Amino acid sequence: MIENTVARPPSLPALTGVRFIAAIGVLLYHYGASFLERSGIPHPIAQLLHNGYLGVSLFFVLSGFILTYTHQTDIINERFIGDFYVARFARIYPVYFLVLMIGFPVISAPLSPTSMAAVILMLQSWTPPQSGAGYLWVMQAWTLSVEFFFYLCFPAILLCAKRLNAIATSLVAAGAAILIVMFGLSSVVPGTTEIPYMSSTGLPIPVLRTAEFIYGVMLCRLTYFYPRVSKAIGGNIFEFVLTALIVIVMSFGTDVHIKALFTVLIGVLIIQLSGGRGAISAALSSKPFMVLGGASYALYLLQGPVRAFCEHLVPHPFDRFVSPAITVGGAIAVFRLWEQPCRKTILSAYRFIRNRGLPERVPVRDSVS
Image 1 (tube, helix red, strand yellow):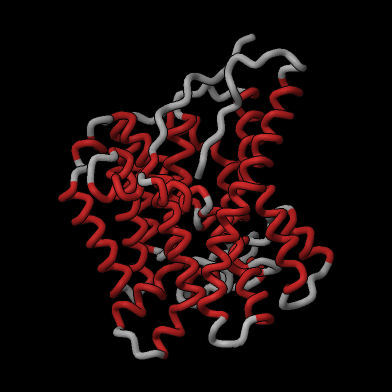
Image 2 (tube, helix red, strand yellow):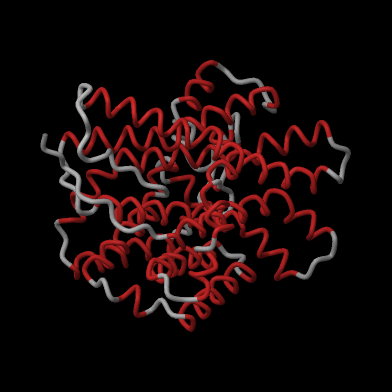
């Protein structure tokens, strides 16, 4: 039997660990930014938490980078497309469905059948930026609607990316970075009010956020053309300097264009972390971060329903402290007891059907992003 896949590339453990940083940034943005600001916390710290939502941008860039890293040597044909879409469904939908069921009893407003169908089908973000419809049912799930669009486009994007040489790839990466900063795309979320000119574009949110995904794809392709780059810039000095710049942008950035510099810088940091040679890379590759990074997807989605339940069941302000702890613990449990078993079951069933019961020689390729 001929397969379109080759041996799986080496893992990039630091990029698993950094996913937890993205998820915890969003969690702290929702749980503590306004609370700490009212408590008199100095401006840079409060602003750092307010900009925690930029963790979503990190997820989008990282998704493009990891998917490209995993699949850039694959032959893109019908078999690849089938394998890819089933693997992505197995990766995201079981946890998504579970969180929707958990969040259903605490929905803040009644949903129409059309709205429910849009959320279940991951279409809730296909609205203009000024619309808040993306927040229906489970607030954080709007990003899954965007991510789902990326998955639909990825085979075509990768096919085009493979046809670009190093110079063209660099130009596309630079163009994506310019668009992100020029239009403040990292801050385009449902109900966007910070970017008035976005309301007149008529473009839905998934299309507007695609530049971040393409940026990640092109950065990964550059490491393919220049494999020594990530190792050359992955030492302690480069990692600490770039991390410091990212923290400065998050601590003092109030304009959407300045905040968008976070996305450009985080892309370069991802290249550095993929080299895995500095102290920050080593820390993110440690066992605790690997566990938390693995559970980051569940952590990201669970925070809304858990917060709503705690607001009903735990006296204020104690719910502010109880809820994050339950979210982290619950995410690890969901990752180990639901996410991983469901993914393995779906992929095993697909492999059996695809190969018609014959022994499989090369496994269906999966990737974590």
